[in-house]
Length: 136
Image (tube, rainbow, N blue to C red):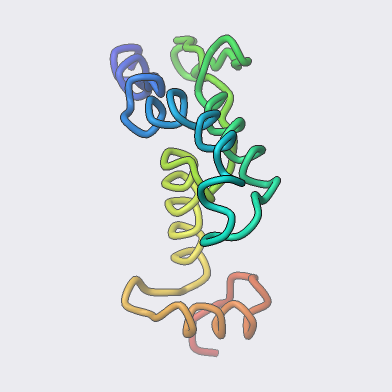
């Protein structure tokens, strides 16, 4: 079992991704030139952009914090870097959130073929609570 636990999680290297390198290299430059070059066409600089980019640049880096995780079955340990938990910009966190919401949908009786409107109706009918499909 220890072999399985050790191979289950593989830490990612966010600094190696093209998106990270793009923001790291050019974000300050774009922000500094926004008013002069882009404001007339795209509107004023929105402050939430700073927060989202800075959170993304900190996401998944061990120097920004981590948790030590231990398998209860085999006592194998690994380090898990903290994430930004945003879905607006970070592809890793957005994918995690999508997977969680997808799994929660199955728990509430939704099928992958349902449209998003059907899923919302199903949630509103059940109140987000799992319902029994057994005949009474």
